[in-house]
Length: 275
Image (cartoon, rainbow, N blue to C red):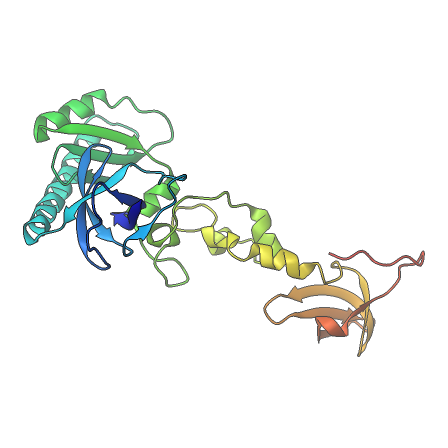
């Protein structure tokens, strides 16, 4: 089975060819069918062979390469989406609905419009749907999403100066815990370790396993160790530099490479446990 990787707005997926593979390569565009809707997609890979025993997760099929007229349809749809966003905001305010509109997406063929929103609780938007259906004469879908999905839809730039990981390449959200920040000796300041969505940054999970593995070769914090400068208590570990900070008996801080540190026995003569 021949497939290509595609991206539809903020969604990346694998699309199959119903017949012979088309000569589609990045950075070209194509038309695909997803869940019965025709959509405009960006090609992210050349055609390649997929394992027959493991079909792609999404039911997406490549229909044809994009033509010049298709780009005009996309531009027209974007204009309608912006207008629908403003119209929906007005109706939300009129009906005093406790929801925050995030994005509006119109399918390429115009048969469906999706309105994405966040809310703390379930919303009765039946009257709102009637307003929207009456104005745009198409099928209306209201989709409640989480704050992380909202950031993925809207996009933006993080404190690192890079485009948000969620809108650039992440396919699904993994659980992020405060323990991951602690393992990397990061300051537990919410403004430093939270993303634009207000949740812990997804990138906290990227290197945490390496930090945990590196810590296995280092004594636990507070352990007594011997260094070329004398004995003392281990206080910090710098994963990047592969060094540790030790407070000597005269209350002086020194920095040594991990290989220069030797654990001392505790008062009972047993070896200090490693971290």
